[in-house]
Amino acid sequence: MKRHLTLLVLLAITISCKAQHEITEIETQYEHDLTSRPKLVVGIVVDQMRYDYLTRFYNRFREGGFKRMINEGFNCKNNHFNYIPTKTGPGHASVYTGTTPKYHGIIANDWYDKDAKQMVYCAGDDSVESVGTISSSGKMSPQRMLTTSFADENRLFTQMRGKTIGISMKDRGAILPAGHTANGAYWFHGKNEGKWISSTFYMNDLPQWVKDFNNSNVAQSYFKVWNTLYDINTYVESGSDLNNFEGGFKGKETATFPYDLAALKDSNGGFDILKATAYGNDLTTDFALAAIDGEQLGKDNITDVLALSYSSTDYVGHNFGVNSKEVQDTYLRLDKDLERLFNHLDATVGKGEYTVFLTADHGAVDVPSYLQSVKIPAGYLNNSKTKADFNEFMTATFGASDLVENVSNDQIFLNREKLKTLDLDLDDVQEAIVDELITYENVYKVYSSKTMSTMSFDSGVEQLLQKGYNQRRSGDILVVPNPAHISYSKTGSTHGSGLNYDTHVPLLFFGKGIKHGETFQKTVIPDIAPTISAFLGISFPNGATGQPLGFVLD
Ligand SMILES: [Zn+2]
Image 1 (cartoon, rainbow, N blue to C red):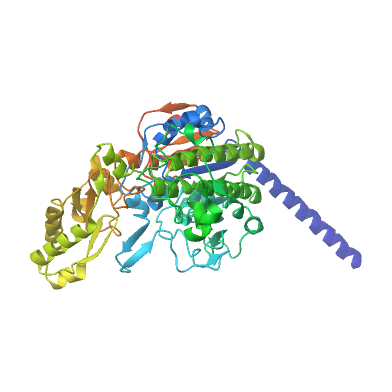
Image 2: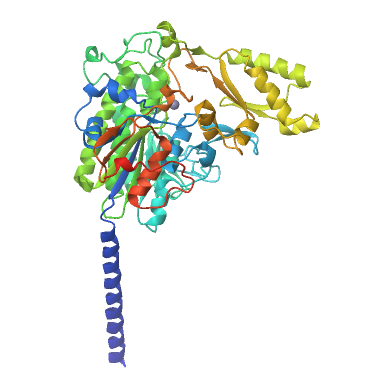
């Protein structure tokens, strides 16, 4: 009896070994079939990077960063956002979903939710909890993004074998690109913690490599003096360091180098000050390298996706403006970070085994007060006057001042219930408001939601608005300010328009499967995801409206 049992056990082991062997063989074959694909796709979004930063600072770049992408890869020199508003949340969603707010639904960073009757945040999610912080800044997920990203499609295609990791100092810069099926998205919680965090949407506990990184003193080590990388007198590609157009930090009289971050941190949000300096990008790169190693990205033939977004360029741009020495230094240092990243990928994944694209989520306008000083039409919107005049008009015309429920993102949301109780026709009210607002100072264009949802525009600012207009989520009236006019302080700058300073951004491809070349042919942001999808042979993101750029592929 005992002998029989032993025989049976032996037989069972042999059969299971054989089955295991066959499965391994099939898996090896599966992996082999994928060798034409890159082991890793790295998407890099540089927050607020205008196209002309590539050309303006070109001679100052090293060989291994931006220049390497241009010299080895493909440069789409006439690449634009094709919708309004050009902002971070919509930008990141559009790059990875291959479509515009009309379809992916991320119509702004924060917007007025008509159903909930309150402002909502593009990556906010009260149904999940923070992971890695005692604060609530981890209550985030991509739930408001209505369509898939190419990273999602790669996960579906590979039966969830290909990994996706999203990294950015800004939560939305990590979460929206990584999509709905990501293994993890990580963002930086500053304040007095200085930790990379996540949410229960992805995991219940941070992986050991993230804990190790957080327990190291890497973030702390950047509380040092921020001075220019090279002699500031050689920074002839930007304006003088001392001028009237820059914000600066609390506790320092002038917005001029050097900045002693250890001394300034307490009055500028603790670890948050790092976000607003070039060192934020260094720290992001440090963390990205730890992720590549910790997650073993690109270690087999099943394509992984690393969605990396550099946020500090945006904070520095907002604070100091397009023409500042601070912006120039931030880009020269980012160039070094890119070199470090590519060198690490060469060493761990292998030269020619990974594919990279680099773009931005929007550009930015020069500081309007600076433009005015050189006689270019520019300026600031007088919101309080507009509001007072508009309220007066509403009361005089409709006998009610509370017909407006919310004004945000250059849109007016009407109180539909109130219109009904007053027996007012929505179309008539919209039309009257359009006629009124177009007479206001610095208003360039005004459209109603009726026009957006019933007409079809194939060019111009009307088309840009329409591609950014989501019928369920957008407002009743859409206002477009004059060129180079913003609602902002007189120092620093912002973005959001459909004009070239906000829409024209870099698009560089490089690495496996990418041709060497350049084009002035117009490309648009939603073309990126279909291009990567076509290259990988996977389904396009489900709402994609862009076209694959076949000419960049080998
Ligand atoms: Zn911004």
